[in-house]
Amino acid sequence: MTQGHLLVAQYGTTPLEYRVERRLRATLSIEVKADGSVLAVAPLDAPDGEIRRRIEKRGAWILRQQRELAVLPPPLPARRYVSGEGWRYLGRQHRLRVLIGEVEGVRVTRGELLVTVKRQERAETVVTRWMRQRAAAVLTERMQVCLERVAPFSIQHDGAFQLRRMTTRWGSCTRGGRLIFNPLLVQAPKDCIDYVLIHELCHTRDFGHSSSYYALLGRILPGWKQLRSRLNRVVEMTHHVSPG
Image 1 (cartoon, one colour):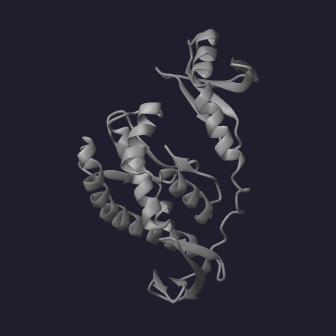
Image 2 (cartoon, one colour):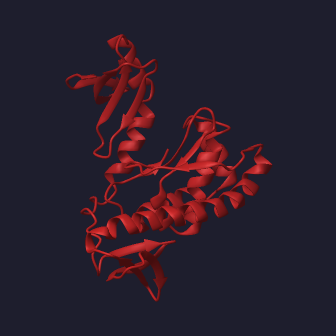
Image 3 (tube, helix red, strand yellow):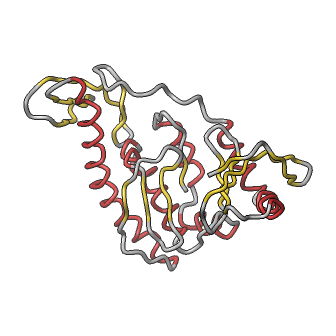
């Protein structure tokens, strides 16, 4: 794997700075990092000119991603998993209260997440495991609602998905229609969860972020921009994330 120095492409009158990382792979991808920097991950033998042309071709998308990242607040400090720390579950704010006991688990009650652990250092493991379990259950329930909502738009899917911790995405969809979601999505209100699920389901019919894709998303979910803003505003993350 090799990563080169800073390069510049041109989109209209706007310069686009980017770096190239070469890997043993067959395809080229373009990423906009959380800090707004642009990285092209390219095959070892990809011509420099072709990489630059791909950057220029995706110029509108790159600038849109950078604008969205620029208006987000600074990331929060890393979680400590101690009593008094604020956590959201299904959009509601809760305070973490860590208790020492023999039977480990998490219980939601009266605005608190009661976390019972054998030792304080077990708190992160227990909370993470509980969040993942709740995400699997809640997203399975919401997926059925969303599948009914997208069906009239010729979108068919079996509803299967995987959970994976991602630092810059709420969800993703492969070209083959495999759906992957961030388990921390369970912190969001249900209407915001639905937005992410529908966003990725639309990719099973229109894979890229083209104008036709956003037209489809807008027909199914006219208020998707407001839901996206609410999601990024309400859910506190150590890294900013977005739908894939």
